[in-house]
Each structure stands twice: as C-alpha cells, then as structure tokens.
Length: 298
Image 1 (tube, rainbow, N blue to C red):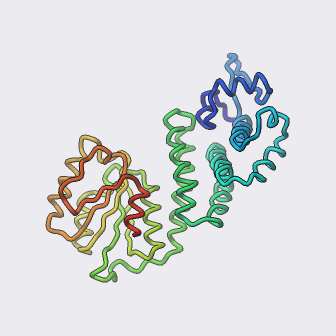
Image 2: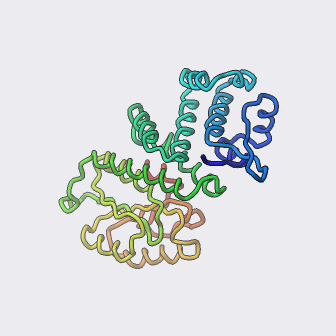
Image 3: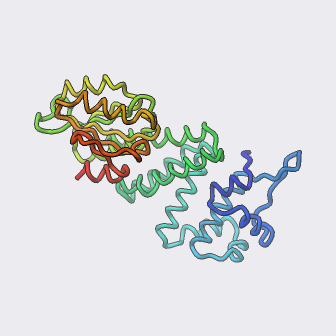
C-alpha cells in the first residue's frame, strides 16, 4: 500500500490541502491513517476517491451531495456527465492511477478508448501530452518515484512506436532527389524523446519520408546522414541539452559545418527559449512542438 501526505494529494488532484482538510472535517469524505509515529497519511484508495470527488465538483456537483454518494454512484455520475472536458479529466486521473499502480492493462484501455474516438494528434494533444506535463510536476514535487515515471513514459513510447509501425515508410534510399527527408534526432545527452516520437509518427502518417535516429546522437552522425541524403530536414525537440552555456556553441557548430549543405534544422524545446534566432536560413526555431508540427505537416 502506497502512502501519501496531504501535500501529495494536493499535487495529484490540484485541490488545496486546506480544502481537503475542510472536506474531511465537514463531510467526513476521507479518513487518514496514522503511522506508528502518529504521522497522518493517505492510501491510494483515498487518492482515487479524491480524484473522483474533485472531478464531480468541477462538473457542478456540490460537496454536500457528493458526500452522500457511494463509489458506484460517483462512477455512474462521471460516466453520465455530458461534458467532454470532464471526461478527459477523468481519463487523465485514470492515467495517474495506472502510473501509481503499474497497471499496464488500464493504460492500454484508456489509450485505445481515445484512439477509437479521436485522431492520433488529438489523442496525444488532449490526453498524453497534458498528462506528461503533470507527471513532470509530480516528479519535481517527489509525489512519484523514478520507477513510476519510467513505467508510464515507456508505455507511451511503446504506443508511439506501435502506431508508427502502422504506416509504411518507403526506403529512405529510394527517396526522390527533389524530396526532403525528415531526420529525427536528439543531441548528445538529451533523452526526452516523446514529443519527437509524436512528430515522427505524424510525419509518417502524412506520407513523409522519415528516419528516426533517437536519443543522444553524436554530432558527427548528422554529418554522415547529410552526406548520404543531401536534402535533409533535421528535426529536434530539446528539453535539457545542449545545456544553457553550450547551446550557442552547438548552433554555431551547425552553422559552420553545414554552411554549404542543402539541409535545414528545425528546433523546439525549453533549451532554445532564450536563444535569438541566428541569421541563418538553415535553422528554424518554433515556440512549441504543436507549432512545429503545424509547420512541418503544412
């Protein structure tokens, strides 16, 4: 049984700790347990209950009414709510529980449900990318452990690879010389590839010629790819690397190395937030991954 502090519940649900305490006292909604040293804690069952309570409250139900509901009645009320935002919030909550409990079956159930109703881009834009942003917050606040973050991140990565396999990619070596090849890569030491995997999937779905090089690609490998294919769109989403004090040097190296090439570099991510766009048509910077996808797919 996993144990949570009231601060953990606040981080997971977005409900302030003082509100949780007030609901406990007025409506007896939660009954925290105590350790041998008399420290209050909550269980994963408490977390699930509070997630449902918070969602119903957002859907317009009064706490006094929710407090009278059984667990089955809460589930039925959520299911009957004709509110797309409420339904998405519910599935985001279920993803949190899948992560906490290492529940792979629940993850696939949620993913397949969304993919049956929405496009790939909508599914990731409305469900998985907001979820991963929240996972980042939970990680920073130590509400989840590394194993839980790795578990859910790798399930999302596996889903992206699986979906990509559904779209045939013509051998890159057969690409028309007038058609640009899209090459996905992350610089050395950069490992956060979920956004890049999504861009790769959407490019493949759109019929573009693609190569996915993956994480931590040495700079010299980019040079070898350019020699092989000439007209290349290199695409990268950088979260942590190159580091703040190395990013200008990295961009300058690109400018010098590919000065006479017919390739372009497309960048987005936090590491480029404060970078002024260099006077070089070979490098294009985007505000975020969504803007990049719009431009590349345009």
